[in-house]
Image 1 (cartoon, rainbow, N blue to C red):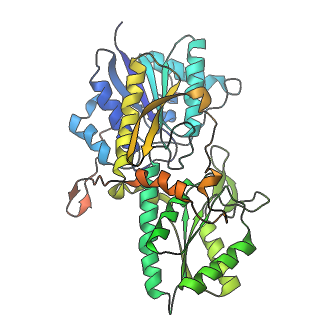
Image 2: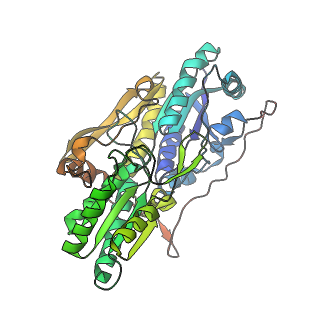
Image 3: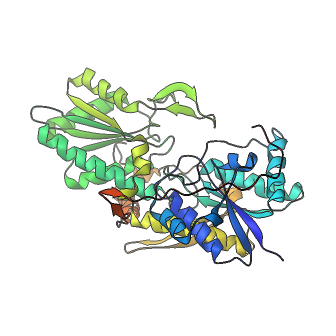
Length: 417
């Protein structure tokens, strides 16, 4: 059987290490040219497949591909575009197959979170029904850490390291000024339905920092929260608060909801930190500062977790190895063997059990009062932020790679999204 081409795409919000997974996919494919002739990347994710806007990764040197391991964000462009069901939009799936046929693509590697797992699963199911079987492998990625089955998600460990470090450093600042100035610092982090990122901020309490966390999994009780903040400030002189963007009132409304929705139909969030900070100001009169980590948290490759980088690369490599072994509709996973000493191996999960399933913070990871984390949560988190894997620096700044991203010649009529 002649070698087939592979299609790789990045999906959703990017991370500090998603390019490490891309590196794992491409480098592994290059070692198996008898089965994978070339890797085409989708420019701006799955949109690149639909519009036949493909990138020829063979035009990149081995050195450039290797440098992806140290470069944040999505080197080929990502997107938030969710394919509907076959019944709702058959033409999109037919278009994908047309593009795959036109470019002799037999492997589909989709690097993303829950929505891309769903897309990958649909393609694996429907490609054969549409007369052109494609091996579809989902490569896990999400800072939210909310994919099921896998112990953790590539991208999360580095965000957790950045948030814990930033919260610790800011807390030292606040502590030094609390006597006559700021007494409360509020840091808003990502996490729509799962509070994994906010939980990482709880690690700083071991540095004698009074910290509180607002999780999406715990209904926000304003009266209890304000009483706890006041107690901590009276005891320690200051308080640091981590608020997840997905924190919500008992009636289900997000503290940060703006009333708009993104391309996936999710509520647009942003602004929980000032809501919480002003709430404290109104109730206590404490001077405050707040910050929103936003893109900084997911782009901070300069402070990436070595564990995270290694796992991100391993998931990309394993995805290709699974495909070459004939597997289909699966996702490589991180399987934890022990926490102390930390040990893990690559596992495998069927996409039928991954698509459209979210993993939330277990209740025993959250303290009884709902505002902190437990020892078992710390045992889970600490291995994921271990190790430093600094990028090379040049003239004081990280030396990141920008690829050529040379286009593949189109062979089909244009397609309107």
